Every structure is written in structure tokens, then in C-alpha cells.
Image 1 (cartoon, rainbow, N blue to C red):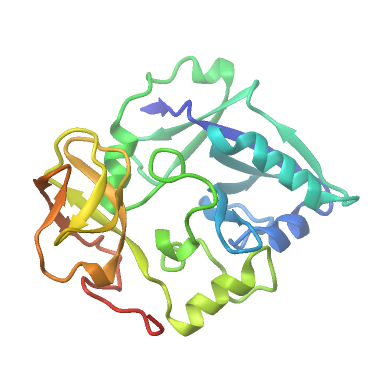
Image 2 (image 1 turned 90 degrees about the horizontal axis):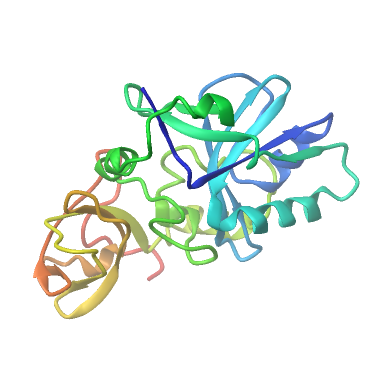
Length: 257
């Protein structure tokens, strides 16, 4: 069953230099080959995430989706980077929709507006699935220009290609990777009441929760502040656990703190 995700905006990149443009601008290894969707981010020169989403290659083009809140800014910036490259950028917000197949949680579904009319209505199932995995998403969990890719664990989940050449913000991300200076990481917060908020540890703020579904949320927190003291959100005690893919741990101090 495909469930509509109206918060996602879809763009199509085609042309003889589309791969080069994307390869040189975003964090992921986007190549003209069919396969599962690849996580990517467009960064500022300072290494902060301006847009993030999934990309797949089909029908001679790259299909990228972003949160609707950053769609206009994403398209504007990509047009600036395009310059005179042989790339056609199509804004598909009026003609196409994005959904997900709950029977295959890693499957992004793309369809025309007519096709999406047959999909199930939006619900919280996608957010519940990604929260259970500790995956933060721009829009419901964080805004533009506040997070580094390491803050989301993109370095551990294939969202950053450390072997390819330069891309926008690459120097900052590479420095964080090689020096081990990532301070913030995603955790799963359980036992939440209400809409969440700042994550407090022993009276100090360690981070903030994103969207809450069923009393759970992803929070991007300072690991060094998870020192064993009671963790609260909104004045109430909560439980903090690490995603099953995490290589980091509570209380971890960056190499250059």
C-alpha cells in the first residue's frame, strides 16, 4: 500500500551534464545508474544542511525530493550552481507526488498526480517508522542551515561520499570526519508527553526533539552531555536509546572538544 507524503517536493534533473552537476554539488554519490534511492544533502559553504532528501535514477534522469519548506530555496540555489551546464531542471510539484510503500519501508514511490489520487491518505506511519530507526528529517525535525551531515548520521548511513572530489561544504565535512569532531548525533527519545521540546540533562540543554509520534521522537543531542544524569523533556523523565546503526555512545567526547 502506498501512502501519500504531501510534504515532499519532487524535482527532475536531466541532460548530458546532470550527473556532473549533482556529483559536484551534493554530498551523496549520485550516478546515472538504476538502484535504490540514495540519501544526499545540499550544504552551505559552511557545511550546514540547506536541503536533504533521496535521489534515484530512472528514464534518463535523476529524481530528487526535498521537504516542501525548502523547495523554492533548493531550486534557486541549484539554478545558480547550474550556470551554463547542459542540465534541465524540472519542478514537478504541480504534476507529481511522492509516497512510500509501508510494506517496504525503504521504498520511495513516485507517481503522477492522477496516480497518487489512488494512494492512501497521509498518516503518521512514515514518521513512526523513521523515528524507530533514529532517522531525522528536515522539516519535522530540523530547519535549514542548522545541522551538519554528521549531526544526522549521514556519514554512517551512506549520505556522504568521502571518496569523491569536492562538493559544496566538503572541506568542513571532511574535517569533521578526519578529526572526529562530531559533537551531536541522533538518538531516540521515548516516553514523551505532548509535543516534545528541549532535551535537558541534569539541568543543561543537550538538544531538542523533532516530531513526536506515539510518545517517541528523534533528537539531535550533544553526546558528551548524556553523562548518566536524568534526562527530561518538558519537565518529565524520558528514556534515550541509540539507533541500531550507531557507532557512537552516550557520554562520548569528540577528539577535539
